[in-house]
Image 1 (cartoon, one colour):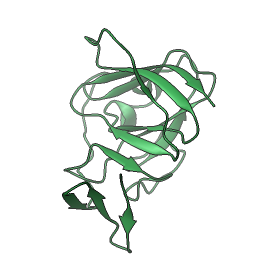
Image 2 (cartoon, helix red, strand yellow; image 1 turned 135 degrees about the vertical axis):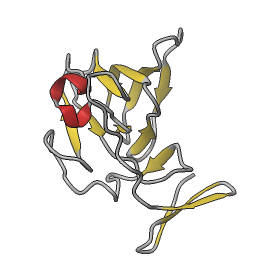
Image 3 (spheres, helix red, strand yellow; image 1 turned 180 degrees about the horizontal axis):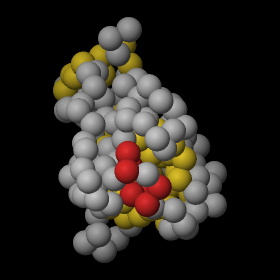
Image 4 (cartoon, rainbow, N blue to C red; image 1 turned 180 degrees about the vertical axis):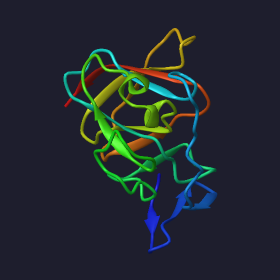
Length: 147
């Protein structure tokens, strides 16, 4: 369970505590050279971010990543944006060749594949908005969102 504490937004995960500090946004020069999100089957848009705030956390519960300064922007670093049905983050903008996180909306059941070699999809149904970190060149394919 995650909890944000104070202005510094210390985040606790079980016995692991990490203080929020912006991670260096990945930069690379070609589509697919970093994390990628593809909206393959959801009429609802998928929110993606090209920045992750913590080095030790893999998930964050909350509507906004505090290190993201440019909301709804495909043309900036430290940004997030919405990915429509049929779109790939790496095809939208060079700023999103390396996506660091995607959001699973609270109250919705989201089914996705995390990695190309994964045979079975994962399903998340959090009570609150939850961001999931993407590392390396991992490809996330969202196949369904039901709210």
